[in-house]
Amino acid sequence: MDQGFTWLPLPVRDALGSAKANTSIYLVGGAVRDVILGVKCRDYDFAMEVQTRQVARKVSDLLGGDFYPLDEQRGMMRVLWYPDARDVVTLDFATFQGGSLEADLQNRDFTINAMAVDLLDPAKVIDPLMGAQDLKDKLLRRCRQGSILDDPVRAMRAVRIAVQLELQIEKQTAGEIREAESQIRRISPERIRDELFRLMGGQRVSTAIRLLDQFGLLQEILPEVSSEKGVEQSKPHTMDVFEHSLAAISRLEEILSLIIRPPGAEPLSNLTAAQAYSLVASYREKLRDHYFDRITEERSRQAVFHFAALFHDTGKPLTAKKDAEGVIHNYGHETSGAELAVHRAQALACSNREVDIIEKIVKNHMRPNLLRKSSKIATPKAVYRYFRDCGEEGVDICIFSLADMLAKQAGAPEQSEWLDLLEINRQLLDAWYNHRDEKITPPRLLDGNDLMEVLGIPPGPEVGRVLEAITEAQVEGRVRTREDAIEFVRRFIS
Image 1: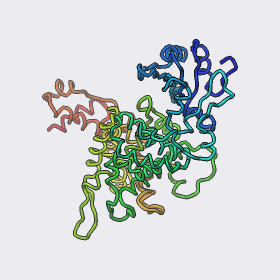
Image 2: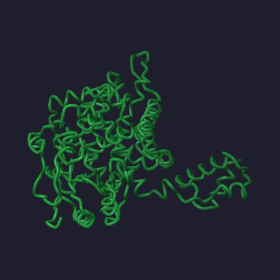
Image 3: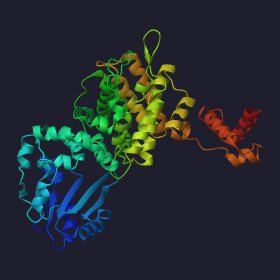
Image 4: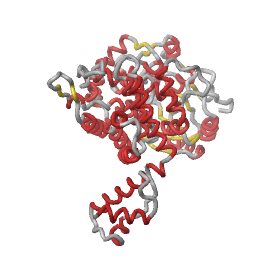
């Protein structure tokens, strides 16, 4: 440790140096791979022979982080370190599985994750399974026969890693992933959730979903999405529901990339992208903060957003009906889809907040487009009711509505419809970010006690109805003072 271990952030390096006691510590797994690739790493795994609890606890104290025992029997401990308000770094400590470092590496998932570095000798990579060569050859290969079937969640991990690192899956490894299809259900919902949301929070999400489907895993993990295949849609849609959903995820990724687009970057390649950029650029920093937000310590808003977007049309197979002219309608599909999304999120043991976000996005995903169809100008009451129902997720729904329209057909959208949708979303985002106190959450002029004591309204649902009517009158500019509100209520109840 005295030689300096430049693979790690300096605070982590110093904490490990102070906490290591009399045992060797090895950096193992994906962190070694990411450092070789030059990829920014936020998850570090350390393997040790003994003393994981003592070392992890001391590291947590030195970093001012959070300490969690994951599996006392296997000596698995976790430290969460927060370098800044936007970032969290995970440090996992575990005793050797198999009694030695060599056995531990042999029992890992893929060769590119079976490399290690002794913190006392950081210049040397320990690589018994030739993972560095596989990394150079862009190949994903299992560590040994049966390693995926021993832990079927590794089949999902293989898809995620292959897509995100653009690797070719080796033939025998691919065969074992297909065999894992029938075994994935024996994995706990929490582990499936964690792997799925890592995939959702990465890049090329639609490609990963398609690959899950090709390996037979999608039907086992997200049967509601798999059931969209072959479900027809009427014009202007040119794809079935499944293909449209994947296209919507792809378009959503493109729009989110505009949010993190650096100023002065290369000019955008087409008019549609430039028009979308003109919308999000006005709120770039606020949107970045929004999508960097972590819904849980391990899952970002972006990952939860992608999950909701994938489910946005899952209600269509249940609601599809043809009219006399042969046109397909899906009335109420957003409500049915929200119910399916909530059921799946709960089955995956998602947090209450995640479930609420997913439900709001799926249930309300058509709202901006419906506003566009009704008027080019959103009324103050419409803006208020939109955010009253959607809350902060109204921002996500604005962004997704753009992706949804772009995914209806292969080419550019109809220009007048696209420009009208951009304008509606501009009005909604402007209200949320620039006029929230005026248009969405105006100060309350009367409360329930006022209504009951001053105006004689009896306790019950009528109180809530009147308070809501006052708020709507405020956002419309018809009520500005307490006296205005009292007079408004007298007229309202008469």
